[in-house]
Image (cartoon, rainbow, N blue to C red; front, side, top):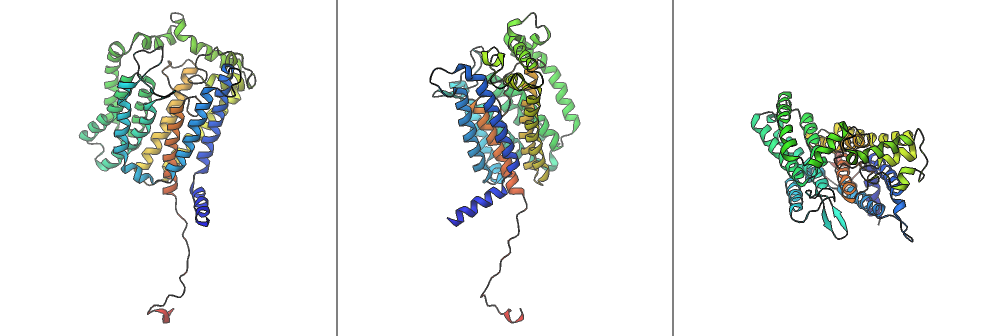
Length: 393
């Protein structure tokens, strides 16, 4: 029993309590917002909306899993990254057999139905990709900028991005691209390669627009410029920004938002959860939400900078950029600055997959923190040990 107590004490001592605490507080904030957004859907006798229950289970399981991962040496996890990556790709590939998509996107296959729940493999693939790409970058070391290795890194990157894009998850595909660029930049890839990539992107965008995008996807972009021509497409974002604006400085009060409590904003518990924060808690609530998310990202980056292990550094930046890019894209959607591309607000939006997988990523950061901290030197004395040198001591 004493050994178990000592283990718990030591485990708690080596845990990054600040990062985990920030994540739990932010998740609690998010659960409260999702409850407010869905409480009007409660039927007689029901105590908790389904979305809130799913989120509670995902966050609870995620916290437990993150603590377990924190006790596994990240170096061992990185050594297993090829296996993890292949498993994630297989799971992603299963979408093309069993996958289903949103009602408005019959061409998309983004979720795998598991009983009455749905799992989104692209969320787990993000974590798997961070591990495999970090391992790849660390393996190259001084040869990183050879043309051959840049091509191999490009192939490594295209595989998950291509699978996610083909499945119809445009938002996740874009997040992948941002993660790739950030990790390559941190690794020290020459600027000329970024210039070449940018040039290729300029050439590819028109082709993708004409050949790949459906009319519905095109209209989401066009609606930002010509809202009067696409009133049905822009409706969600218009209602969202009006709800945020109606909150003023301090909001209408928790559970008192007219837009939120009437369900006027579509997906207010999911992609548009920021409208709930803005309407009911006002600008102050929005600032608090963004401050919490910013602190999480900064803390992860700080942990990465403190380690002398390049691969650990890449993992930290990969997870940090994943969170930061999703925050920027989601807020951009809510403020009508970016098209709606199905990106959740980390820790806030409803959804089991995103909440569970983000805590898996946090578990990796906690592992890096635990295994890169300087351990205390344990002083001990050995008694009643006789050696030939005892007479000289």
